[in-house]
Image 1: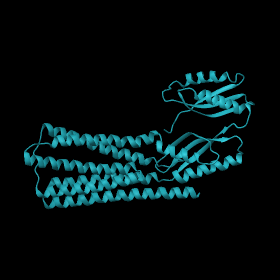
Image 2: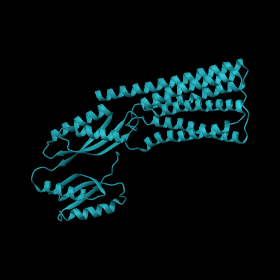
Image 3: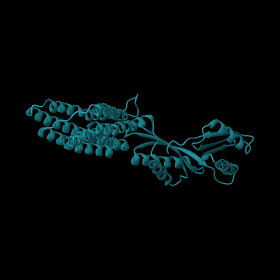
Image 4: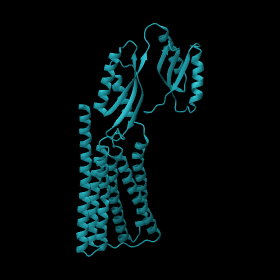
Length: 378
């Protein structure tokens, strides 16, 4: 209960930080819109007033982030026992689509300008508005994106990138206007097209991250090594295998793994060991971990001798990268073992047939079961 309470506090703190950052984004866009509107009215400029309206629409990504974060904090129910954390990924997808759409629209307009260039006209007032807008968007974008990276929020990262791209587009327009005024060379369309392509590429990359999370991306090699090391450090653990991790949002992870223990350990000792492992995994990584057991045969008996022979025989195959989970039962007349083939092996059935016939010669009077495992964590 204390673990659940601690995790909930951490999750709520993260959500509040995301919402607070998003409100700052909304406030900045609203203030910038108000500034532009006031200048537009005083200067009698419809273009500046319309640009102010556009700034209000820029706050949409922050609104989406807030709504998505609040929905993701809904408590778990019977239909959704792992909660609603994955809603955050949908928020990030929506914002990424907005960025991608803006990039495509900008690309189309820029290409039009390449073939039909127009000479920009700027007054002192419009230049002041543009410079203020660039500074505000750059500061806002960097702040929001940095907070997104700290909080591991794809939605905030996408929202911050959206603001940065707005600033870059506006800056490119200003630069091209200066070049036009100084040297009478129109680069508006070319610069716009190049920047638009960068935005389109970034939009696609923004889409990839949350979509991969929803599809079930593998956990990082760094986290895999960390978990394996931490579990291996427990006294009584002689190997860690079959690590699998499912992501149900930034705050909820469900995992499983197997550990090797000597067959001399009692059920009480195994229970205590697995309890320590699951507690540490939750406290350090927020992972609800299930721990399975593989027993290592000890002593001088047929089981231990067969274990050594079978493991060595299978490990000698170049297309087998790991062998574990040996099980032998004279009562059930069965021998079973798990193998992890190289990624180059695509025909599991043929591999099983080959390995089974090979091991069968060692125990002709028994059923041999070869189980093909796959590496889901690297």
